[in-house]
Length: 299
Image (cartoon, rainbow, N blue to C red; front, side, top):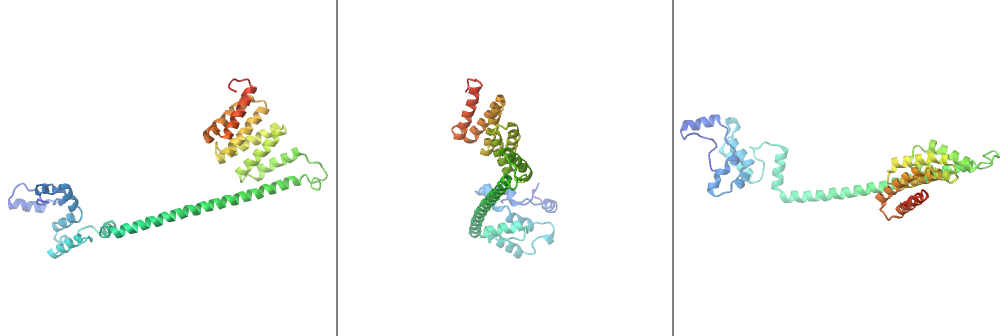
């Protein structure tokens, strides 16, 4: 490093002995600035000295004889290990230190192995994503099949009530079938909120079209709440139910409420689908029709 290991106040021998006894020697890399006078860049020299060479020099200068190199041959061997890129005795033997020395000795092999490992990890990730996607699609298909079977069974049981043998000769009206279906949906399909919401929507619309507004309202309101919770505010099914609620409010004569709902549906469809999507334009048309009925110039 171009200088001695101790900071001396004079050149007297006793001063040197005092420094050897009392001072800890500086690391060569920390005082490498003196090398500038020899034409070597200090920052480059510091990088060369930091690490093994610092540790080798400091081990040779330790105060306790038992902690120094036992011989000049041992010091020479440690320098040889440093030049060969092997771990040196002077360094603390940690896993990270030995790993770093191994990587420096085998740069190309480690780089190739790392690239291969990255390729295998990437391939494994892609395969894992594909497997997860296939499983998700399979699970979705199974769920749809189970729902179809459930709906089929539900409808078969429902219309069996209209069989004269089952009804004991009584005439079963459409209203009675709807009432029975509404009760059973609430009771039997609570484990599948999406299917429950879909059937409540369907029966609520039928009630409304039959003029049974008091029966339609709780079903459509419940279907809207279920779909909002399960599918989100801007999902197509949620917006479809919200639109049916608007039509119900119109038929109930609650035009102010219908206008509020209509604007909410239109805003959500504009945000989710864009201003020129067919569903958005249907909402524009429905709201315009309502505003025309109330005499508003915005229509």
